[in-house]
Structures are given as structure tokens and as C-alpha cells.
Image (tube, one colour):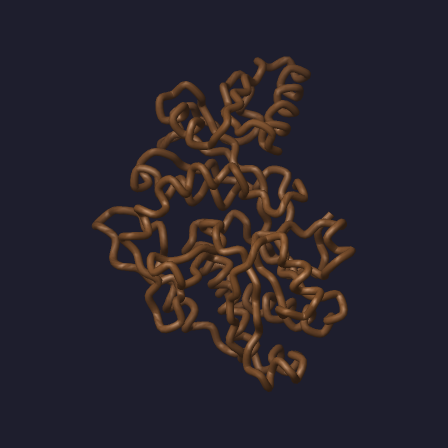
Length: 322
């Protein structure tokens, strides 16, 4: 995985921001804690923003895990979390423009409940997240940040999600694409200069070395162009990041245009909750809370509600990235 601020950069922005404002005008961040509520969708229509209120309310405090939380946080009853709230479906604002929502937001609230504290979100520039953590301005970060060895030299990570490249196809998968090996002989669209383009070119080499038809790579300036080409059949697939591909598939044409090919993310790597390296006890408490949430099924239910269960991790690891 690249060590860019997060892999959902130019790939999702051009595609998602075009329709996100219109989509969110029909939804609201309901629930007493802003837990991803929304107005009911039209009958049969997919929900871009699931109502996860009941899922969050169902999470129970884990007394044993809460007992490991450093006293200053337990006494304050709050953890201050910094994010860059512009990355649907990871973390973004509801229609009111002030309520944070997304699967990361829901996971953070659930972890807070496990620990018996409230998690307060702060929005800031991605480039300020690590320095704010190091200075003690915030307690943790959660912003689709890749856990890499380079970043581990600055902060510690509790890994909560595995992202990577995903294949998006037309609804019904008319070209019967089942994975990377079945892209041989197909025309695949990517955004110029991304890790998706690099992977497609590498896969093309694998196809030809195996004596299979070459993979044709169409590189454009935006994911919006790629979606248009996919809809009209000029390409058979688009390569994108897992959360972005899932969100686009659920929202474009009210879910009638595209779908994501099932399977593990390609070249996957973990997203991590960032914690100051001098605050190991907090990192360990968060790790235990996440493992508890995984074990009781609450974690999987949250990811499933947002349609990103393909990125689920089986174990909460400390600094598991490479």
C-alpha cells in the first residue's frame, strides 16, 4: 500500500463529491449520538448511509477492558479523537454539516462504549494529525491512515481495517470477472498515477507471461471518467480502493450501475488508530477494546452495515503494517 495520507485521495474525491451533496440532502445524522441515522430510503433503494443507531446502542462496556484504561481518561470520561472528515464512507459529515458519520466514526463510538468513555471527534487537516498526536493536543487519530513502518517510527497503531485494491464491474457482472486472474484480455480503467495503475500494469505482465491475452489498461484523469466508460461497456472493470468502490457501487444510480467483485482486497494493508508512542497503555487498552468488539460480533455488524465487511480484520494488532 502506498504511504500517501490515505489511499482514498483523488480516486474517490472526484467521483464521490460529485454526487455526495445531493445524496446527503436526503439523509440526516440521526440518533442521540449522531450514530449514522438517516431518513428512510425509498422502498427497494439501497441506503448510502445506514442507520447504525441500534448497533452502537447495543455495544456493552467490557469491565475488564475498561479497567486497563489509564486513569486520567477514565476519570475524564472522554477520549479526544482527531480525523480528517472528508472521506466517505470512512468518515465524513452528515447532511447537517456538523455530525461526523462513517464506519470509522461508528467503530470509534463502539470502542468508547467498550471502555466506558465518550469519544469526541475533532476535524483537522490530515497533515496535522500525527503532529497533533505527538504534541498531546489529541489522544488518538482515526482517519483511514495506513499503518506503515515509516509512520511507526512516529506513532503507534492499533490496526482496525484492511484496505486494498478492489475490482468494480457493471451490475450483474456481464464479463464474469471473478478476480485479478480473470482480467486477462479485458480493458481495465484506472486513474493516472495511482497504485491501481501500477497494479494493472503488473497484472498485464503476469497475463502475458502465462500465455494469456494482454490486459488493456485505460488510464484517465478521474474516476468519474472511468465510471462513464464502465457504464457504457468501453471497459470491463475499474480498479479502486475497497471503501470507495463499495460506496460508489451503493450510491451511483441508486445502486443500479455497479457492483464490487467479492474477495479479499488486493495488495491489502491495514488502517490504524494512531496513538502517541509515549502512551503505550492507551494503545493497549484500545487494542483490547477492539478485540472485544471483534469477539462479540459488534465490529462485524458495523462494517456490514456500511458494506465494507471485506476489509474486516480478525485480530486487533499493534503496529501490524509493513
